[in-house]
Structures are given as C-alpha cells and as structure tokens.
Image (cartoon, rainbow, N blue to C red; front, side):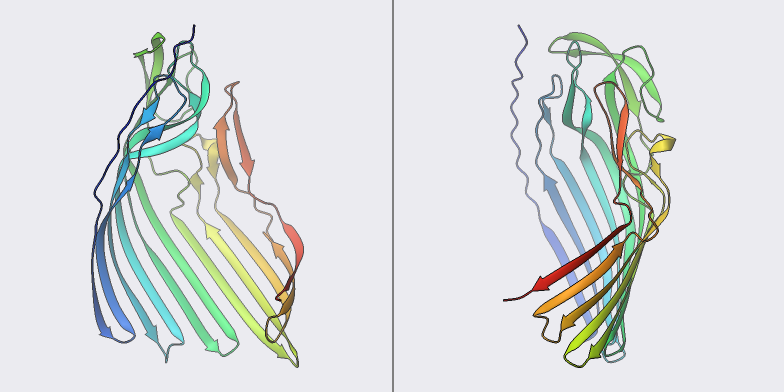
Length: 296
C-alpha cells in the first residue's frame, strides 16, 4: 500500500523595522530604514519534500523625496539591499518518491541578494499636462541555489551544473541529480525596467478629451530557474495608447485604447509537464478595445 504523507511544522518569528527621517525643508527629505521580513513555511503533497522552511528577509533602504518648481516637479530616489535566506520557490517538478511523481511543490532553494535603485519623476509643465517616468535597476544573485531532480538516465533540463547523487526517501533509495545554480541572477527580474507616461487633457465646452500614452521597457531576463537559452525573454517595449471622452465631473466616460502597440509577446510561466516537456505561455498580444464608465 502507498506510504502516507505525514509531516509537521511549527513556525514563529519576531520581526521589526527601524527607520529615520530628516527634513531639509518642507519639500526635501532623506530617510533610511532597516527591517526584517518573514514568510512562514508550509507543506507540499510531495514525498520526501513534504514541508519547506520559513523564508526570511533583511531589507536595507535609503532614499530621498523632493519637490521643486513650486511643486510642479517631483523627484524621488531610493536605493535598496535585500538579503533573502531559505528563499522559497514553487514549481511543477518531481518529488522524491519511488518512483517519483510529478507534483506542484514549494522548496527552499537557498539564499539570494537583491540590490538596486528606483527613480521616480513627475512633471506638471502645464495645468493640463502631466509627464512621469520611472527607472528601476536590479542587480540580483543567488548566493546559494541547489535543488534535486530524479535521475532517469537523461540529463536534466537545465543550463546549470549538475552531479548524480542518491537520496533516501519514504519509498526507498533513488538516484537524483543535484543541480547547482548558485551565482546565477534571479529569474523574472530584468536588470532594467523603464516606464514613461504622458497625459494631456483638452477641455471641450461641457466635456473633456484625455489623451494618454504609456510605454514600458524591460531588459532581457530568464523566466525560469532552468536558465535554458530558449527560456530567456528578450528586451521589449510595450506601449499603450488611449483617448477618453468624459464629462467634466467624470460622471461618464468613453475610452478607446490599444494595448501592446508593438505586439511584443515575452515568454512567461514555463513549466515541465508530466512528459518532461517544457510548456510556456506568452504575454498578451496587441489588443484593441473600448471601455465605458458611469457613476451613479
């Protein structure tokens, strides 16, 4: 008869935040903080991987917020350093049963360091014109990232180094590959993200016309912990344009829009299915639409 999964886990953690702020003037300030984070462990229906440990975070932040030109220009800049321990990672994969089964499981993949900065700028050059931009830079690295998959005779689907080992499971001893992705950058974390926005309002007697344009750039990044070349999303721009006719008091509105003008579809959410084939989706393609809104 099959061996039942029976596991227990107790989690508790004291977390805290320390912060300081100094105001140079009513429109200029700097701040710094240190805080700890905690994400409880849990359970998976996976033999040999029935539970996973809590994830903890130490977060350092320093930044400044400023307004200039009679509050028409706002510039905010923040730098951060995050240190993860026992980072949790969820995916479809094999458990350590004998024979292994394909399950959706969460495991602790190790430690990682994330650092970078956020820059946000807003400008009001005229009463009906709003321009804004944001820039994010990320430098990520897995300080340790080791996990195991069953050895069924074929090399595992990964670009990371791997070595054959054996492990004892509730069903007996099985052959596995130890996969070591330490030193790799975090997946789903582009190094550069840039967003540009523009909005122009045009009064027209009893109604108004609002024109909006938004574009988002993301640099290339891997979308899977396998780090396979064909699972790397390329650098892309995604632009959204819209035009809205609305009442002056916004009680009703009618909007026409186009999303993803360039029709750039980055690969997302890859996973390995039960046939050991990698399946992935793509982001939303170019989309046109009309929205109507009413307030009662």
